[in-house]
Image (tube, rainbow, N blue to C red; front, side, top):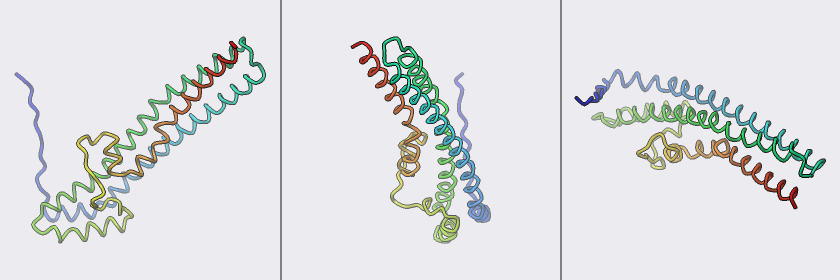
Length: 201
């Protein structure tokens, strides 16, 4: 027998429950914001540590190459580029999962507001709730969560395109962390080619 799936559909809120949900929204958004900020801090620490390590390796590579440019200099030709490339590959996973965690908190942030807006729109008199909802968002400095036409839904809510269309500044803010390892991988690849070319000429 094939296993089936059971979907639980929550019943619509009563007027009292909706009023309490709107009143509790700023506290919920602040909670999500604190956790998202914590993940931002962890991500910044990892990126900063990665850049610091790569800076030391590149400095050691440059000094070693200038002082001993010959083909027998295995320290600058093999060891330092290998360490730099390994570090660029290993750091992909901590940075990637930090970004995914930040994205998940951002989606929770949006869903908390979107759920209430959808609940309000199902009411016979949504105009009675919109001013209170808008007032809470503006008073709590969450104007970007107001339902405007510049935000677009996508089918895949976990994709980067969802984050880009819902909040472009969030996506662009994480672009440096997404690509920094590729920058150093390219730098080390150029360094290896340059060293081999000059050593075997």
